[in-house]
Image (tube, rainbow, N blue to C red):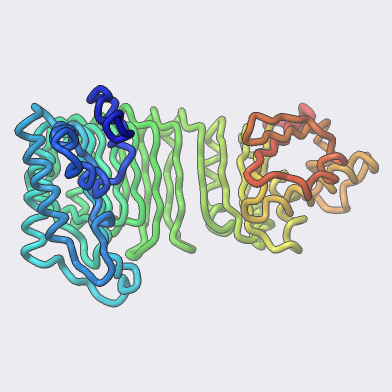
Length: 434
């Protein structure tokens, strides 16, 4: 008995697990090996479909892909009472080179085939839906898809929302590169999906005002801007919110109101320091914050300090990723600790200019120990006087952990592994703590 025969003798659920690790075309090729494999294929519920697996050089197999998806779903609809998960992805390999030059809708025949695939994939009690379109124009969802009552998780990419939505069981919603035709459509979506726990709005178009309220279970919100028109205001009136992530569009002047989010603990920000300073006032009203900030320069940090009446923010844990010019690194370190007195600071080696930042920080810490009364003649160096002690821990990816001194860490900077987590534990004098 050869190896192929031995595999075919395995229990069906084990063969299904093996097939789940393969791409859709590979599964199809296996189905023609023998009657046994064809029978296994017919009983295997394929839930993830991607046109990229059908791409062939100088050949358009889009219709072939859509036909394959429809026949697969039709077979599953006849065999199973429900299709709990459905993932559908359409990618045009030429799309990214022409994104800013023109918008071209799908061919009518192809659009018709895709519509019937999505209608079929969402009519059997789907609970997790992922629809990804990377084509020159937005894809308009079939009307029936907008009212799937069993839907719990929904991820949409490259689609357009132009009608009322009713997903009453929804818990997780992710919209990326989605066009929202009317503000009222989004407001209605929030109203009809009261149990949302996670929400992401990434590079979407059509909203000038984001207002989230009445979502009693909402825990995480992510907003990333990448297009015009600019968003004027983000207001979240949800007590349960735990994590808020925000990436502005360059120097976008968006007013953010998080004052009602009394349980907010994690604030993630990606952008330049000039943008970040606008949100410090809101952060001062939050008791515990884990801040992930991406710094492209430190030129505006002195302005940040001057804008805050009480410069010490209530930040317990600070996770930092830096992109800084070497000459600005010293200023960044000083202003950072002038703004806050974190109990711990986390950086990952090999990312951005984190290694350079850690080198500058450790040199300052070593100099502080050698010159106990050193403050550098600048009020920004006052943090060194408030610092009582520091401990550095190296955490490798393989469970490696080691506590080192500042001198030892400086000596080992050249031997740091990529993606090694470095944790600085600080002990501050009582008077410096908020």
